[in-house]
Amino acid sequence: MRRRLLILFILLGLSDSVLAEEVYVAVAANFAGPMEKIAADFEKDTGHKALVSIGATGKFFAQIQSGAPFEILLSADEATAVKLEQGGNGVPGSRFTYAIGKLVLWSNKPGFVDDKGEVLKKGEFSHLALANPKTAPYGASALEALDHLGLLEKLSPKFVQGENIAQTQQFITTGNAELGFVALSQVQKDGQLSGGSAWLVPAKLYTPIRQDAVLLTKGKGKTAAAALMDYLKGDKAKAVIKSFGYDL
Amino acid sequence: MEPLNTVDLSAVKLTIKLATLTTILLLFIGTPIAWWLARTKSRLKGLIGALVALPLVLPPTVLGFYMLVVMGPQGPIGQLTQALGVGLLPFTFPGLLVGSVFYSMPFVVQPVQNAFEAIGERPLEAAATLRAGPWDTFFSIVVPLARPGFLTGAILGFAHTVGEFGIVLMIGGNIPGKTRVVSVQIYDHVEAMEYAQAHWLAGGMVLFAFLVMLSLYTFNGSSNRRMS
Image (tube, chains in turn cyan, blue):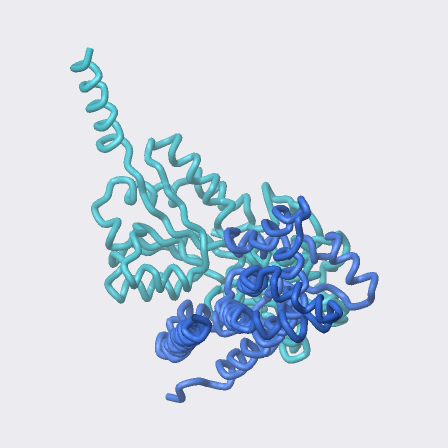
């Protein structure tokens, strides 16, 4: 009996270590929704498990530079992934664009944001939320768009900054900020706005938000990490990514 | 490079202002609570004491999250402040002040309460036999005797507010000059890879914290000696 148990445990251990691996992924906050879905599909289809950490791209960069155990970074921009690749913490040649993000002006109140963004010009609100432009690419894009609209100076006293794009959404969801700039993926599901009112910021107002994935040196040669990189390029993942409003 | 830029300096000033006002408010609010906790025989003592001590064990994110909800437009406090015409508290300096008062309450109430309890019945009874009224007794007997408790409470309340981070991050909105305190500014510098600037502020905080604890321990040591 004891020996049989022992064999069972060895087999269980083997199945864990040989067949299914874990991969540590750092994911930009705007991609939290699609990643949840993709990670579930990935586990079902390959048996590998993706352990997902959500946060601001800038913070992940600092953590990876300091030896964080992440094996893949899904960045909210191109620049961070390039920096990692060139700085030796990313695997050269592994980088690819997994999604092109869209910026949206969003309020949790139906009818508050019109479909031309006139609400910004009227300025009848006390707080406009955006992600910290220093660390979150979507925050930088929001500044760029406001600058193009000629509203940056007028509206900057009303800015409240979230630490990342998810916290920015939380400020708006709780109604503490009447409106703010978030990623379309946060407020859209299956091609529908999940609530409130929104203005899709025209693409000409800001540089396209190319979001790059990069395999990190800690994930080099790991089966699960390579599998997830491939999986993100696959049709099934692409369909999920598009359903959240990203371009590809 | 300049050690501290104007944004850093405004964060330092804001932090000192927040900590000073929090400490003053807490001495006014905390003293009656500490007195009641020290003297009462009520069954509610445990309940109130536990409520005051709650921030010691709760993660600041819990407090921050509930403040965001409760002080928001749909929350009871948010509706009250809107009805009073002062608007919403999140993303404002008064909002941070309210948050800090809750968060640092036990650090002021507990030392003061301990000092009150240490006085005991005898000095109060003696004062009563000399026909001192309750206010006279409080200010002539209790306050001087409890001075070390007040000082410890004030220093800890101030220092703890300076060290506040999670609540400010959650209800502050990172507005320069209004809600961007030093701890948040350090976090921003680190996230933006501005390590040199982060070092100036972070090193300053280490020095400040050390001086606070040093003064506290030196002071308490000497006052204990004097008492014995």
